[in-house]
Image 1: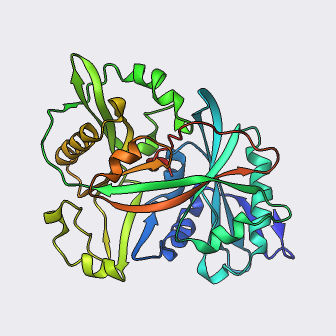
Image 2 (image 1 turned 30 degrees about the horizontal axis):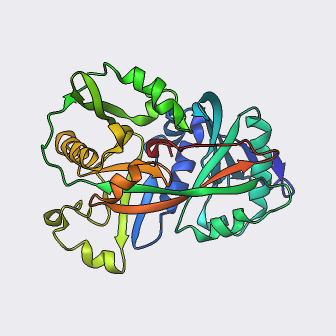
Length: 342
């Protein structure tokens, strides 16, 4: 699809576009007290495809054959309102800083994308709290644009404080399939496929009582296809980054200009949402898994957020939206969206 007098081309990405997509990711970063660059190296397109059926589009400047924007959606089977549905997670549209004032890209991109992802039960996305420009733009109603309906707040917890408190079983999954049917299937936006490649190289940890799983999770190493590059600190975080925060139970702050050694917790279950059991279990997992920090994300109505709020952790927040081109599909109950696939 060509536009603006054939100056730009909008099309789906191919493997030949990896270098151009990588350049856009490397040009941006999450601003704030902790400035982080999120990367999908070495092959961004393969990284998206690991998360599901990726429909990734690029915009190309025809005069210099430069990729100037990338975005799209990842389609996958997820539980919604207790049923398996095909859902579309919108990855957002990243525009190279040199072209960010070309706002005509946005409406055309959404039109193009919707033509190729129709048929999903629902579409949703997240926007970081600090991305105020995107929030202001997308929360307004625009002609030829979908409606962004704010569902609530999503918190990602970064923690460690590892200590061997509980005896863990590793990679013994007996009983987990039953939890998928009785527990996780009732959490909307939980992926049906817990073996999705996007979770990375995973290990399963659990604690049992009389043979029953009373706490469990996967911990995935995604660093082969997703990275967090620490850029810099400012404000109070600049001071905190110089302190021995591990002494106080918080993760050590990664050094500026370094990649974070992280693992992502998914499918976290704690029987009866017990705070102490949750804390003891995750601290034991952190000690066993061997990462500098672990990440877990929970929507505001997830009962385990109360337990996580009692742990020593660094938080960053996002806003969760349903995205509707036409009639909005209901997403009810507890949201079980996994941070590993965002």
